[in-house]
Length: 545
Image (cartoon, rainbow, N blue to C red; front, side):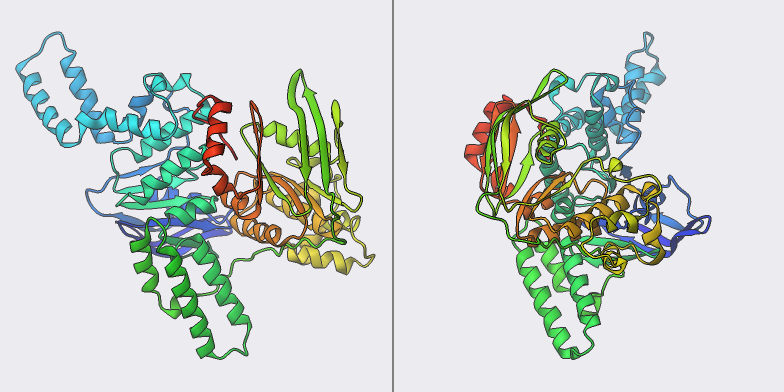
């Protein structure tokens, strides 16, 4: 068990935490959420001892072992991959090295024999005989083939080093496991392996992640960092979001009688508990949720932007036709003879490891670059709004947010633009901030406001979730689910893709796979699996999103 007692931390005038008291118990997985800059990673560093708080202490049950997901990807370049994993259990690795050094001595003394016997006992007690096998299984599960296990860390790709360090953190069944964005650089199979591992992990897990699908799968509790406090909630991310939004709605509706509120909240708890019963962690999660009282559900003070795309006109029967489209860039054929027919109700997620092909296709359809061969034809009633992966060139130096958005407004009155800025959490004087000083997430919110003002009936999004916090991702997700028009998009967010798309198009080395289905159904389709195995020739590390 690990306890944070009266933790406070400030940087200058910025207060990250004030008198935080929270207890993390075995058998549970705690998801740490909070707006960008709220201090999620900093809190993990306080728990691990990497950062000293201004006040308070972190208390760990004596004898318990804690591991963290290391971020210094080059720190182990001088070690073998398999040894780097075993180093996650410091005591075992120390025993192994001392034991090996004794056996390698040319002159073996009586003292060496006595010490070797002691080390053999410790080695066996710590699971040393199974260490290499266990480490190898973890590496396999995370998509690192056996041919690399004996390689030096310096000789493998950077994205694989991240996976080795994840295996290091998991190795040896630690009592407390701290993970900061563990799904970064993992393919879907590796994420699924990690989810199953954590679902069956009986000790304490504390994780920071922007991956809502991952948080929903593994978390039994959510810890919300807000205004220097950490509030603990039972349930996964979706339960936290839906219950807090319901409580907020009821708080605003002062006319509702308390009995009606209680009945509505009880029905919500019962319904969610029934849904949870279908999950792999069903028994423990359902028991947790059924222990909830009405007073446990409180509105969140977190601010969610309001995202809603309302087309100025309906889209016609013909949305988009692509015929034999080809594009070569720097001698590489990025798009090869692509033909597609996009229907007026399609919400298409483009997936596959060839991320450049998706961006180039979107740039062609948006009119930013020309194809080498082939044609594309938009429907007569189709209007387009485009979200580029790199939005830095969209803004002029010194131009304020309000001035930028006024160019896309159908109303001369700046009050209309200010209303959109308010929706996107730019209130008061924030609307006058120059666009060139905005953070990545703020720029994305400005571009989304522009797209809302344009009122298009076809939206193209090239990785819109990359710089957003969970609140903005959730708001955009909801807005696109409700949108009545065509969407062409790609994203690294599993839940975002699965909840929006009704059609999946994958770029593979052998051509395009095109299915009218959701993302999860696509992944589980046997015919698709056969096509993908043939296209990738059983290659393991295929990053679809």
